[in-house]
Length: 434
Image (cartoon, rainbow, N blue to C red; front, top):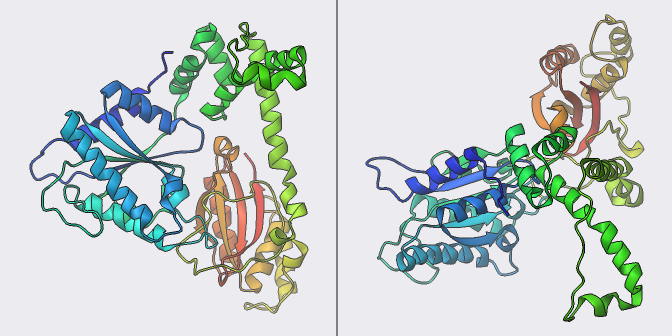
């Protein structure tokens, strides 16, 4: 099967890998390349296609291997795999890379409730040390003065900002944000459906019908097409005979080519989209789990960390137990200020309810900020942090909010309220929709 390899992706990886094997005079080359982007866009698969195209040996580490009940094991594993990659270069005479998948899932901190262990600290420190001394990587308890081959490191992840900041500085890590454009998406989806005889026009129509879906969505659509034949096979042999028909059999079942017509693919795609929306809208965990409805105690100070992918993407309100209660204002009488807020010009972008929320939360000493996201990333709940609103003057906070709503006129904007002491969110409310 001929899969599509994005020229932009190929160029970025090829340049980074090649220059790490060159001796450029007086040039400091970042050892690590961080490939990041939203989920399901094929970052790892595109990397594998580049390695195959260039004939590169790959040593893998999963993000799940970066934690262990024994302190120091993940850091030792990174050093061991790095030396293994360097040995492959020496023995086989071919370029090699060390690839760590989902680095943010294994070593990132998404909020104050994410446990920060000794291993997390050692993993960050080990990668920093290797990036600074790529030819002198020693195993714990031994030392060898012989220099080893410098081997580039490729990291993949969704949000690299959750990693330790000194690790991702430009001198150590080069960043590459992978977001396939329309041509890339058409090429990749065309490769997925290449064995099925789908015409270029049908591929284009399929991509344009679901413009906000990740690449893995189209792979799921193709897999769903076979469900009908498998269902017919199960009823044909009988439920009690399925196991003996598919396990340790000399005559495994065969299936005819399913219906890959565009109309059938669109029907399956819309069905998957409906299921996605049900998951996003139901949020049954909030109803069943009382612990999610109660304020949680942070495990550590969280001044430098935040939730990169918030749990809620809709207009949510505080739980009754977290509802702001009237409190004496630091600026004056709350009732008189609320009446002033209600008398604002009707041309304002800010509703009366939002104004009242801002006044009440500031009066209680809470902090306010905004988050914004475009229509495409709204589907994946990938909000971006905006400016923080004034904590001393509600009028100034409203003025800043007005400017933000105007600046992000074509995007979703939501108001965030949180306790500055515990960093616990107490309000998430969408106040603008494109």
